[in-house]
Image (cartoon, rainbow, N blue to C red; front, side, top):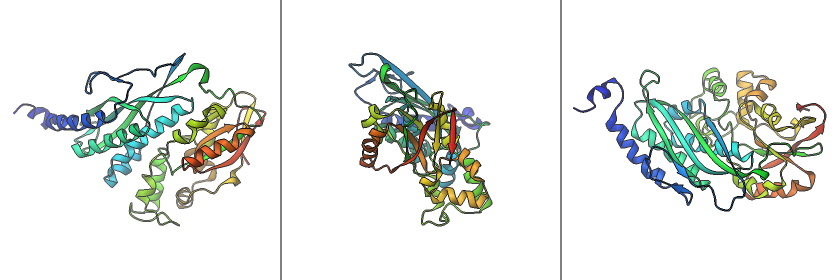
Length: 340
């Protein structure tokens, strides 16, 4: 039988072809007016939006870390695909970029067609929500590198912004207000520690409630990474800078956009940690310092906003259903982030 030796070695070409066919249908659903070429070609193509004076491409590659292990354990595969897209959208939103194309990479071993299709369904859902084409991708079967029915997930986003409107943080100045935008949970960072504490040290099952809540551990851990595009896109011209709070926490990410001579002062009393973070800290006896280094602690994005624009930015976020609060300010001084 054709392909029998390859299948015996761990790569089933029949399954791969079936997965490609299902993926092709999903990819077709994300095509936009900027899409060029055929689905399934060797390379994905998109046009730049018409009418731009000096377009700059903004690109980012990322993954969702060990959140995929929770998805695999729970048998839920579509949410991590959506996580991947939303995380990537936020990364280029920080620079003011409009997302126009996305490409995914799934690597694993003996992945059932339903598993691959689930992941790509989530990716496509995220792309459609942002009017962005899923321009292509790769599904690699790697026996010997991955255990059966396990996978890793990564993606690359392409966005575009007018060069003179790109944000780099240079406009941030002393006196700016720091506005926190709420996260929906861990987003896509800190899962190695979270899993160790919740599932290991505390011995909780996926269906057990997070202490102090009615939310199950699996629902809390697989909550979809929030996109801030709808909340912030309408007010981009009122912002001085944005920081996407991912691995490294508030301090590790906010410092990346601060210009020299500016320091961010975060008032830790302005919000309470969501119960999931409190449970991890208590259950694992994790110090406040380490919690701040690893997790977003309920803050998914921080906007540096001039005082006269705070109200309009808060209103835009509220219209998108994203809670906000003033969490600090920018002061003249050294270059860093401090908690009070």
